Length: 265
Picture 1 (cartoon, rainbow, N blue to C red):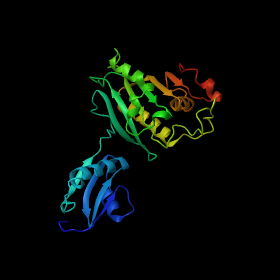
Picture 2: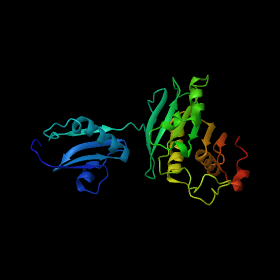
Picture 3: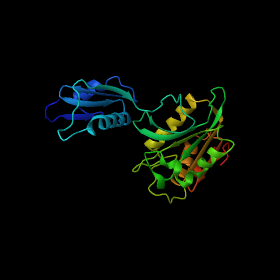
Picture 4: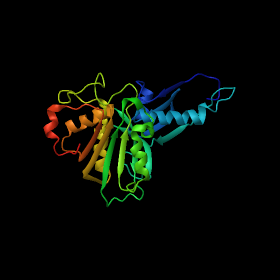
């Protein structure tokens, strides 16, 4: 690889045999970078892990290119992992930006807030925040928007070490629900299938409850605009799950209203 030659880089789940051979057995958060024949392969168990591996390759080798070109060692064999915290263990206090690989193929970016001195022997209330269409993103920036100001206030309050918060991201081009407009007065959730990012969010929420010490009687959801629609969607499909909900500027399904009498809204 020291001669001036052209070579091909395969990133992620390509249809090439070289990618398939190197990606076999990798977990969702793992990547492996190695020469396979005359191709440099960045294999991974998920698209997100592939991005992390590709960034490592870019930072370590591609950006180090000289006027003579790019030098990639022939014996390069890099194994690494992306910070996805699939089991939620070892999270630091405060906010952590992570990625959740859902069963439906969606790689869901999300922010999670953990209390200081998290105690597995204590049960914590869990808040789910669903953001609006105006702050769609894939970098976790929704927690800095005006509609999430209560999260900033929470961090300074006397409850800052007594609660866990999950705030998933809906990227540009995606929706929490399949509405054509956010001006609907009501919305039919009963006869509408959930969007992939909503399915992934529901799975993430369930996984957090399974792996963290959460009080199942103190589950809460808040959403603004598109997130308000999402809040009603979650209530309609899970009528007995949440102790309280705050849907702001969203639309609900009147046909399920009688099933929500156990939730403070």
